[in-house]
Image 1 (spheres, one colour):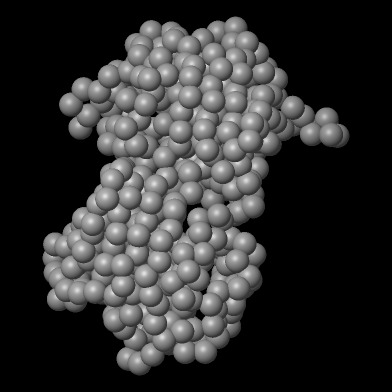
Image 2: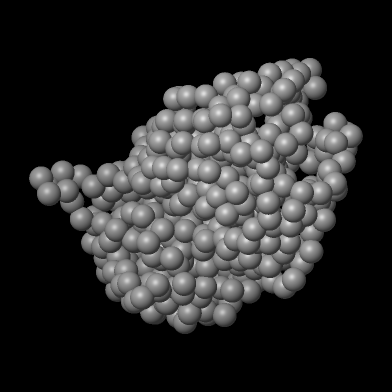
Length: 436
C-alpha cells in the first residue's frame, strides 16, 4: 500500500491540463466490443481503472494497438467466449466497477454475458437493477447465481426494441441499455435516460459507428436498431471531475492557476457552484483561470436563506465533486450545508478533516454543515487513509493547505482516477512524494 507525504502551505501556480474523462473512457472502451472493425480512441487516461479494463479486454481477445500516449485502437474481431466464464475473468470483474459495462455490448453481439458483482469505491449501496431490467425489456433473460456471486444475461434470439421508463437515471445503466439496443430489432425508446456529457459522447461514438440514436443530450432517447456497426474514431472529453479538483486546489492554495482545454460547454454547473462559495473562476476561451484568493465568501440564496449544495443527476451537480467542495468550504467565510443525496457513505471521510481542525457537523450519513475558517486558522497536518477516489483527492487538497506534513495511505484509490497526480502537482509547486 503506497502513501503520499505532503508538506503543506506551499502555493501552487502555473498551467495544468486535465486528463481524459475516466467515466467516458470506461464506456467507449466497452463499446468497441460491438463491432469486429477497428475503433480508434484518443485522450484515453492512463489510470488504474481504465488500464485494468483494457487488460481485461485484451485477455478476452481484443487486439489493442497503442499509437502514443492516450491514443489506441481496439479491434474485437476475435473474442474468446470461453474465457468469459473462467474464474480469472470473474475475479477480475469483481475488482473493477466498470466491468458492469460489458453486459450491454456482449449481450447485443454474442447473446450472452456473465460478470461477477463489480467492485469499486466503498461509498454505499449502488444497485444494478436498472441494468438488468433494461436488458430484460429488450428480451434478454437475467439469472443471478447467488452462490457464485455472478450475474448472467442471455438472449435466446435477437434483442427486440421496446419502450422503457427507467426507475432511475443511472449513468452506467443507461450506457448498458444503449449499447444493447443499438443492434436490437425495431425501435427502442428510453425515457428518464441519463444525459451526462459522457453518455452524449457514447451516443456520438455509436452514431459514428453506424447506430441511429436521436434525442442525444435529453432524457428521452430513441434508438433505431441496425444489423451491424463499423469502425470509427473518437476523442474522449477532458475529465470534469479533475477540472473541479484543480479549481478546488487553486482556491485553497493557488497563486494563479490556468486549467487548459477544459471543454467549458461540457462542465455544466461546476464553475457556478464554485462561484457560490466565493471562488473567482474566469473563462478564457476554452481555458479556466483561478486567481489567488486571500479570502472567499459563501453566498446566501436571494431570500437570505442558508446556502445548500446538493448533488443531482445531470444537469445537476455531480456527486463526485461534493468532497472537494466540502474541503474548499472549510476555509471560506460563512457556512454551507453539503447534502450528498445519491450515496450514503461518502461523507464519512469528514472525521479526518475534523481531526485536522475543520469545523464540520456531520448531521447524518447524507448531510454535513461546514463552518468556514476564513483563512484565519489553517488546518493541521494529519495521517489519513484514502477511502475512495474522490475523498482521497479531497484529503490531498486539505493536506496541501495544512500546516505541517501529512501522510495519506492507500493512495492506490487516488491512482484509480487521477493520472500521474504527484508528478503533475510537483510541476505546480506542491511538495509531495510517494512512498511504497
